[in-house]
Length: 507
Image (cartoon, rainbow, N blue to C red; front, top):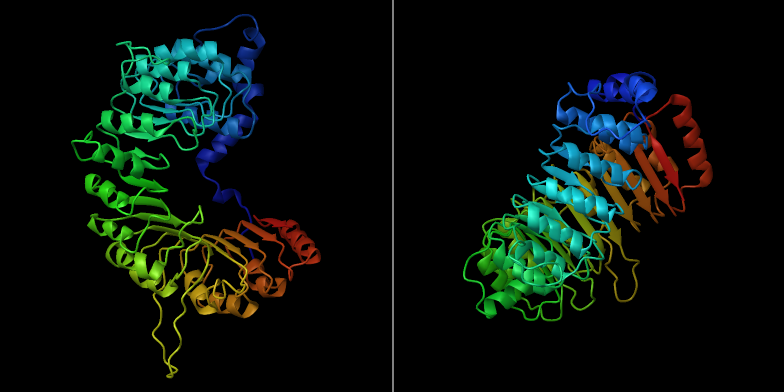
């Protein structure tokens, strides 16, 4: 059965935070509410939390915010002059006051998170100039504009990490004002361009930022190690071919989208010898030797390959096999989507230290034909595998082998460390296969299970997993024909009766 939620399983710190939040207004904020709140704006307050370390005050702030308990009077008492990190994400209400108090009190601030917020322009423009010691800034999914972001280029010379993901109002001019002596309109101004120490720059989803600004960032930022632009390979290729790049880069990741030639990746690898993470969208320009350039790298930790554009279905065994053979020992994450010739046995043998594995809508899987003898070599078990996400195509005339065999599926799922499992359209997951997995002590660490369109597994087969002792906390079943509403409702009653720490979803 799933574990019963016990107080002993909750840390002392969490219990203290919970207790403080429950009595915050009746005890901790009582004096402030009775005598001061609403009478004036207070730049500084000697409050009940001033003796706590800044990190604990931040933990209390996040605890309240996550539970939607943060109120205006709490802001006065929790923003401290000693604060080093402040999370203002998802805080549209009272964000103006938060920024005002930040500018008046937090002169030592190092990290500021304003993601997923509608930013008040006047308050932000007056707050940022006071945060001269800022090193980490997140503006992802916010309403930041070129004019506002250019303030960082004026007053934040120590900035090393900047997240501008999915900022739809941000353009090249805004990014360039951080790097070059020019304002947000492109007019030369020597006061701008102070953010030369940036080593982490995230811009994915910001569609108005083009390769022009990214090219300038690659040339200017000599400490840049993390850049998630969708086609950094193409940017580097143009710089090298244009003779504008006279040094090796420190980048740890490469992104390739619709490469112009089969040698684009090789050219990028030649000037980025420290790359460990590669994300490739296959294109029609790829050849059988394109991925062999990855053999020149010292080690690899992550490989993502997908045929998102539908231009080239990469044969994994033939073209990625040599790369996995060399770098498999250090690989911790492998994601293959909409490709073909995926051989599970090869992955298990070459990549024994995988932690994350995703195989999504691949066109074909290679299965070893059993020999005449009944004794077969046992496949390597991925003992460190923690997350598995596998989705299969429905077999048709063009994709007869679009699902891996039951033996390969079992070998993946018997990982003793597996904690998160998502399966879609897995018709080889049967009651018998699940019984074999449980007999091999599989799912002992599983805390999240999601099955989508898995029509060969029944609730009777799942009972052994769901009702015996296990750490499972969340199970989700979507359009699984053998798992009925009645099964779901009966199990829900058991969860409630026995007070299991378990959430179940059915659709």
